[in-house]
Amino acid sequence: MDLLMKAKLAPNSPGVYIFYGPQGEYLYIGKARRLRNRLLSYFRESTHKQNRKVVNIIQEASGIDFIVVSNEREALLLEASLIFEHKPKYNVLLKDTEFYPYIEITHEPFPTVKIVRRRSQDGLYFGPYTDMKFVKGLVDFLQQVYHFRACQKGLEKATKPCMDFYMHRCEGPCTHQISETEYNEKCIAPVKKFLSGDISPTLSLIETKMKKFAQMMDFESAAKYRDLLLKFERVMEKQRVVLDQYRNLDVIGRSKNLYVLLRIRGGHLLAKLVYELDSTNVEDFVFNYYMVHRNEIPEAVILEKNINLDVPGYFGRPRDEVEEDLLKKAIENAKNELGIKGLRKETLISLKDFLSLSKYPQKIEGFDVAHLHGSFTVASVVVFIDGLPFKEGYRHYRFQSGKIDDFATMKELVKRRYLKHTLPDLILVDGGVGQVRAVKKALEEINKNCDVIGLAKEHETVCTEQGELFLELNSPILRMLVAIRDEAHRFANTFHRRLRTKETIVSILNEIPGLGPKRRKKLIEEFKSIDELRKADLDKVAKIIGSKKLASVILSKI
Image 1 (tube, rainbow, N blue to C red):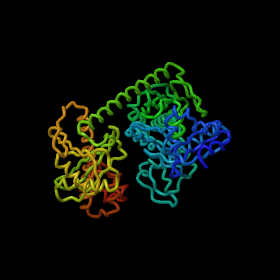
Image 2: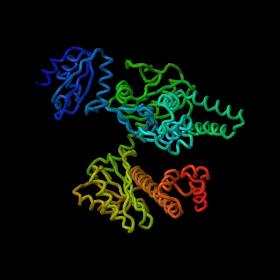
Image 3: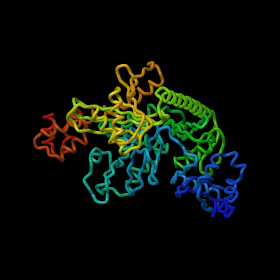
Image 4: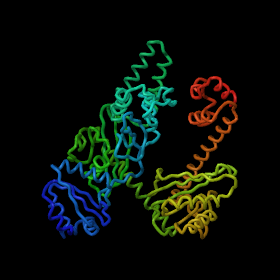
């Protein structure tokens, strides 16, 4: 049955329609008040003249299906759910300018609270946030207050608790000493309330406990709660207070197809989020952000116009001067971000022309190698997309130590990476013509090809297989290449330093008599360096290894 005939057979009822591709893949999902009328519009010549996307859908589609529902609200929810699950080629897709972190409360009897960048069907998510350091500080603060578990261990059988339990950071559901109901009421429910923007009960609880212990002359416990309040202030100090404490808002500003969303919870600006969308209609952004991506809907969403999304909450223009000012700030930020994006694109086009690259360098991967006289040899790969770091794509690689040969290491790195991963548009190596040729040779040996350039440190010289090229030090092209090279260098050195530190603590602990592998492992997991272990008090070390006498020996030996 051809597409037009199937469209004619559709009922004139509310529902969702689906265009399928040749392999049964989802091409486009839409909703309609009257399915037959909407589907027949795809075959009208007048529609084809106005909408190129409709022409592409009809040309590629091999089938149509539809799902009848009771009303438009059901159609809206079903459409959003199907788009979230199948991500069709021709639906308006929201593109993050970077991958923002979320706080996830897992969906299980004893939930854990963790930080993630990818969301699944399960779990309760709060965010997204802009600053990973802020999110880590926030989760750490909440765990100290509410003692939820942060581990991933199975809880079917009672087990020995980890250090979080002994440090009073977890109620220890692994010991089966707390019920599911008590754990969720005591540890999880108040965290949900806090992350939803109602922060006053948490701060009041801490202040009450601090005063109570002070009155009881228990100054050590009082100081603990005082320090928690100070920690909260430090975590929030970069998040400017913009509103009275009890107003929770999202504010959305737009400039062309670029959107900026300001997330305000409990009066604090928690995030400035930047997205691209192949639509300049703010309703499309709202639908994708809240319905398709299933982000939390606050009490109010402030926009450039009033819209009806048929879900609880206010979606519309500012209702007072404070919201008016916030919307102006969001729009101003969107204009600035669009300008910066334009400059990045111009720089990448100039880079392509300057180096006569085979393609526009949308995806650039930067390499760097680090070692200590041939020991602890590591390499880093950093990924930049559209001139911005894509940190989820960063990778470390370890190599056998022993000889100093950066060329051989670079060739091995190329083969290990690109026998598994797709090639980028451009590879940037930290080094000169020799390193560039080593990378090209390795690519040839695995029958692959890609543009490769190097950046020599001494004079910031751009190197190709053919020779060296020079740019002014203030050139936007050179500034972008230096930023990628420096990021690869930072990422490699961070990993290298971590390996050396771990090796040092392992070698020192190996020489302490009476300290077995299990206790060594516990110490290494708790203390990341010898300096950290030296600063620890005797009682803490004794609690970790279960022996005060051995703890005393350890601290005397280091």
